[in-house]
Image (cartoon, rainbow, N blue to C red; front, side):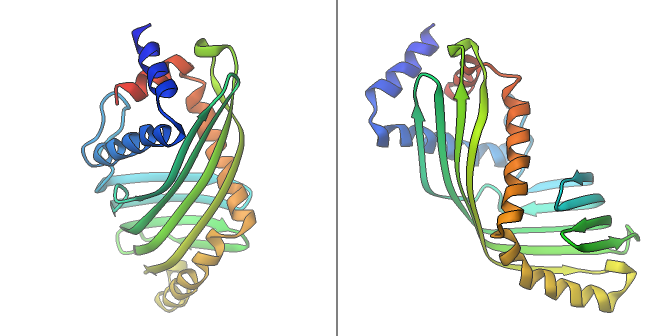
Length: 236
């Protein structure tokens, strides 16, 4: 019960801007956890993220992807800037606002891929020879996450609504072996680099991302009561 009192003390004592500080502190600790890992969260080191092998399977309306990645390296995930954040709690509602910006995220991998993005089919099957490198500049994630909250501390949060805006200043993308053809790879790399900022801000793409976020959050939240989530935040 002491944990609940501690949480209540924080939320009752602090103003709206004070609640912001709670989330800011959490995000600052998350930056560190992304670099060091976090055992309680089951979070591995994600910045830099390195993996000998990674399999990706997606089957959404706009994106269908079956990929095998080797020698994966990603840098910059922990280097986000906090533009704005807020937390609002009522008896049956829980609202989070995250407005974050990543100045630069880079990634490289060897790959084998078959898939479709919108109307574009894509493939490349020589895993050891094909390489993919990208640098995303100024990616902005601006989300309002609205959750329903029933049965108090012993209940579960469930995603009620997501409002989401995404933007990307530029993507520098280079891949070899797309369609198993180096000339085609160069042309498509240039096209992907040019189209990515427009695609990221497209309403259809954003709706796909909202559905994916909602599914992932609901799956996670179904395993944690509100009380367990509070304990997790307080001990983070």
